[in-house]
Image (cartoon, rainbow, N blue to C red; front, top):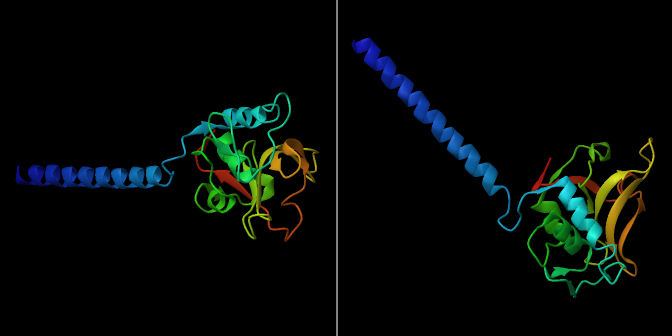
Length: 180
């Protein structure tokens, strides 16, 4: 009977340790997602990105690093636009923060999926940039369609090659709050 009791105690200790590990892992996973970023599906992210194409009386939202758009009050620059589409807290994170804290590196441009981002986090506030990947423009993956907030033009959906030329500074990333 003493042996059975010891086995029961050992089993309880193993279960308690397993529960502690699960709590630690779940706490780590939840804390990896910044508080101001709620989960969003790829479909909803793209749907939100499309809204700025015609939000300005049928035209694109104009570009600005100082102004804020609509009732949600997101900054009208590239990182404010990505933050808006991804439901990351207004007025929006900066390009560097989207890269460093709100996304995870993908192995290569070939790994891009609908709603991922292509970002150049290096440089000044006028040279850093981020776009939302939509789809490949051709079967050879030499260019892709992306949603972009850019100077002079505002919100656009156009074919790009950022990240496809070695050394151009652009890297593929998945936003941490995007599901699916």
